[in-house]
Image (cartoon, rainbow, N blue to C red; front, side, top):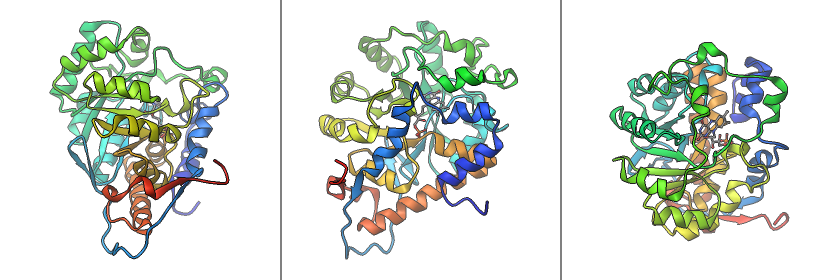
Length: 351
Ligand SMILES: Cc1cc2nc3c(=O)[nH]c(=O)nc-3n(C[C@H](O)[C@H](O)[C@H](O)COP(=O)(O)O)c2cc1C
């Protein structure tokens, strides 16, 4: 292949470098992978409504998320076990993210320590799977705050792990040499932590989590307006509309198809982010037009990491930035802030 031109090229490069088991782990979804496919395909059913003659001579993709400046409205989603994609793992992801000028969200199940990620100087958020043990939960939140993670992203769509049949067939598990003591506490390794994720978390716990930390809390894995309203009531700073990249409950809608009703219900009271299926800058502008302040990308930067380490991460994010900027210009917008609901329409042929 000549130089990679887009995220799909990076996926092909990653597929050629990773073993089949690891590639399947990263690319796969739950059960029949209906939601996994839908996340990508649903973007194609939304079309753009460009406005012309608006002086778009100096467009910018820069914006603010939770008060933090980012150079593009794409953040790096929490993805587990990154050293199985590249020896630099989460540290490589962090350096590439920093070079591109955006925020990285570190998974609870990381294979580099939170301290090593913090040492890269990347703007960082910490993703929390709430453990059964309250004391451990408090320690994790405290560690995140001490290490300069600026927000806590609590994942709420994993009371149990989805059934990933590709992994059951391949038997792939994270190579044990990558499992350093990464939760960073009590010598717990991420695979040991999996069993400690609590299946009994409730809205009351969200209230106490938010009250017990200085960090803004976001809930990741919201798919209905009802739950979005509960999130507002429970005082969180924001939500991530997410179906976990199609890896949890198969058969739920694509996130882009529920984003509009959720953004309407929230009505600007808290920050709304979205992830799932982001592969193009045009996907990003569609999500922003439907009410998200930014998107998270999981697999896209991961393919960059697998293909070329931190340079691959940076390049994937730069490609997305260039695509976002061009889409904004062609839509008649000078910045993400100028995108409105009037810039998208559901394809009449496919609605
Ligand atoms: C291999 C893999 C591992 C993931 N690990 C986590 C995780 O540890 N915590 C979490 O909250 N989400 C995790 N996710 C979900 C992502 O944060 C994100 O919701 C999803 O990847 C978005 O879809 P996309 O990959 O199409 O961009 C993971 C996703 C993938 C693909």
